[in-house]
Length: 351
Image 1 (tube, rainbow, N blue to C red):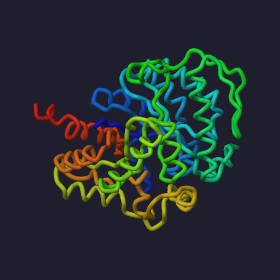
Image 2: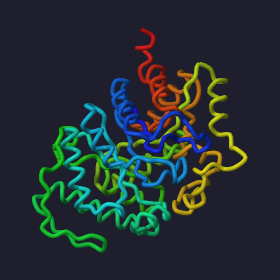
Image 3: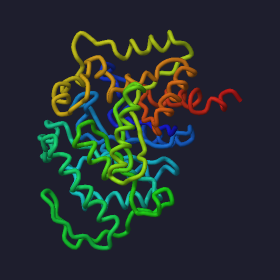
């Protein structure tokens, strides 16, 4: 299992708790990223929203791509998975920016391609907003242009959404051994609609999922593997979001869970766009308001309990075919230290 984490660009993950002790600042995420390499974490996901979906739109949030460029220069090993929404970034320009960041990081950049769901954010920033299936048609063309710019000496492209004429992009991303000596950063993507799964199986290398129990994740992996086989492609990488609470006893873990999911009398600002988020996605099951208090269905995997219980649950996910956990914790710095010592590297703690 590879262990990753969501970079706290919104100042936390809990919609019910105003101050999580992890400010949305460069100094905090720099310190966290550098420490995470020492703790054994493999990858960080840098989410991209221009407004703060967790703490309310007036709260601070960090820009994903400038943060990624800065982290590329001050880290050595950490894979930087940066979210990108095609309707916010012209593909040829993004391909150029990504190639440059990849060079700065010596081949550690990855993309998490996300089809935008927040209509009000797009309105406020003057970005294009497509309806659901149109988003994936746009994303497919966007990936065509990005991949063509990275892989060809010169690109001409004419589609419904994008055009490129005699496009030249140099230098290209790093052609590492892990990439099969191709100048193409790993493309991660997620989605639960038919349009999303079809696109991901054909044009991406990794499938990332919201949190779910093992018995829900296993058939999703099997379904994507079937789709990959039909497309004549090899096995994908599979990742999942999860919120982790590790404590010395089950009672302590339960107490922390109750604290982070308790709803105050007045819904916090982070709940303002709850209805819009649900209407803008096609989730396979109804999302409960209590679950929404923690982002990305993070409570469903039940990575909550003693170190032994959480480690056993991780092993169950690994046996189901999962390769990567993308964790959220609060407060992140302190809890990532605990998770590393008790789950990722318990032998170091015993020594």
